[in-house]
Length: 79
Image (tube, rainbow, N blue to C red):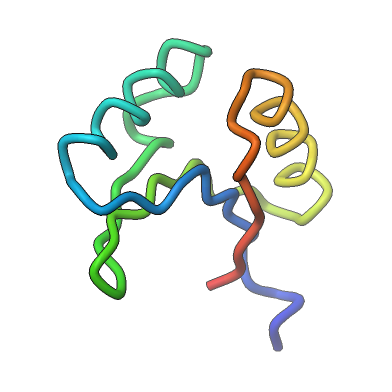
């Protein structure tokens, strides 16, 4: 079921890998590991994501922190 899928904050969806890598490095600078912060090509965009987290609560906590750090477009996806 959808509720059993890991929750993954998506920080941004960018049109170039170069831009996505810049965002990824900024997120790593906040204290996340390189393994946690990934770039995934999807629908012509490069999604920068952090996680996965075991539950939505953890993911939403991280998303709130990202919002506070200036990543206003961060949202949680499940896949």
